[in-house]
Structures are given as structure tokens and as C-alpha cells.
Image 1 (cartoon, rainbow, N blue to C red):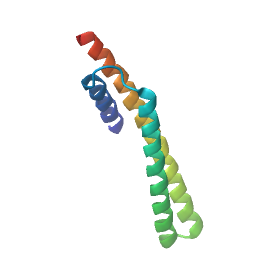
Image 2: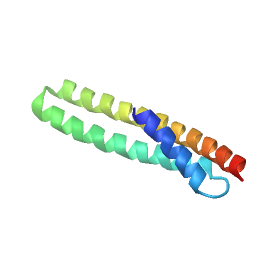
Image 3: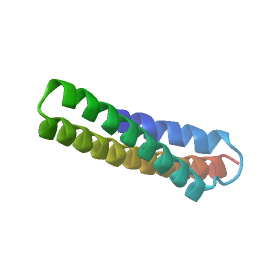
Image 4: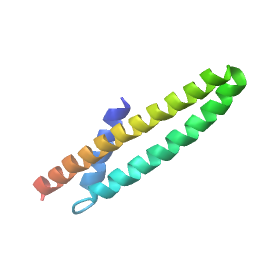
Length: 95
């Protein structure tokens, strides 16, 4: 469901902004935001996990969660960029 929302948001962004979008810059920003979110959530999950579970399980759950969020952010960013390509294509057809 979230992937469809990212794709539709990309299409709307590509269609509403005139001209070609800087897709490399969009990828860099999306990956950067994903990395920051992943690291922050991994640290929070590790600290919470250390307080609740044993140290190994707490740290492992935080690291795995952070990696999953980074991968998800990269996936959603790629879908958003694909959406901007589709939006630019629709914009060019409508002219």
C-alpha cells in the first residue's frame, strides 16, 4: 500500500512540476533521509531493547530494524523517482 502511495506521489510530483526533475538529486535526498531515519530508529530500538531484553537481543533487534528501514526507504525512493518519470511522460503528452 505504501509503495502505491509513493508511486502516485511521484507521478503527481513529476506532472505538477514543469520541466524535467533532477532525479539523481531526488535519489540522493531520499537515500540520505532513509539513512538518517534508519540510524536513529536503530539506536532507539537498541537502547529500548537493551533495557527490556538481554544485551545481545536488544542490539540485534535495533540493527535489524535499522537495516530494514534503510532498505524500505531506498525502495520507496526508487518508486518515487519512477513515478516522476511517469509524471514527466504524462506532462509531455498533455502539451
